[in-house]
Image 1 (cartoon, one colour):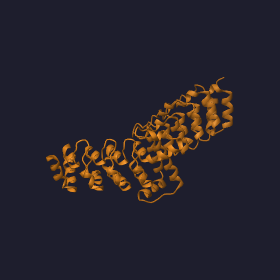
Image 2: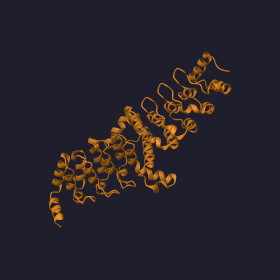
Image 3: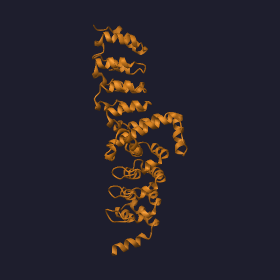
Length: 377
């Protein structure tokens, strides 16, 4: 038996009103009104309608999705949202509801993006202040969803967490206080920061730079070890500048850990240049947290200053901070070319190289004599 248009409208009204007992009884008696039914006006299904309302009971979601499992991946027409997108918008505290849909989804279904911004369901959860257990359930189903980026700004879900936190005045004030060096002990910030560290740790776990011995640990030991690489994970996910600076303020020790390639966060900043002109702000913070990083060689036997010179980093944009942190590194030969830093800069040519060479010689002018003597030998 099929429903008339008036009956269908009545059912929709009951769903909107949250008359869940009546709705459940109707669908138990009329499962055909779930299967294959798509609203012609907006392309939504019954599962979309129920997932959009936060008070919908778990049992009803299970009934609907079990009756028509294919509905979990259908995108409605207005936003291109799946039921999971809508659930993450409306039921941010219910891990169980999310798990009900996840159990019926294939892992790569989590890469389905809406048509407005190209957001995944994880973006939706992160952007709507979902609780940490919700994020954990989604990431557990398909960890690579962490790396998915929006179409427009190419942002990961980590950016959505950050933007969501900064939408409130208290959120802005918390970050401002931390960047000034104050401590913040508030539950709201703690919940937000735990989500950031979770996403960062799980991202680093996916990286080829994650030490293999770490992955062999049991869950508790692994989480403890992963925590040392939060800063690496935030950089992998291209976290905003102030988020990275906040992380260093909260835990300077994160700057002290090298990945499997021997790269400390300082090496990574110099290699990737994530903020270009503003890289200098981050380099200062890293050097304050762990100045010894300027002396550390990675697995390619490169010091940060050698990488910076090859990458043509401008003196005022960070190279000067690295050089002045410990001028002794200016007398260390590059392992590949056997050149001092000033000669390595000179060999590259161009205006940036001329200025860099000049600044390096100002810091250590006697190196010219040593360089000449090395050539004569």
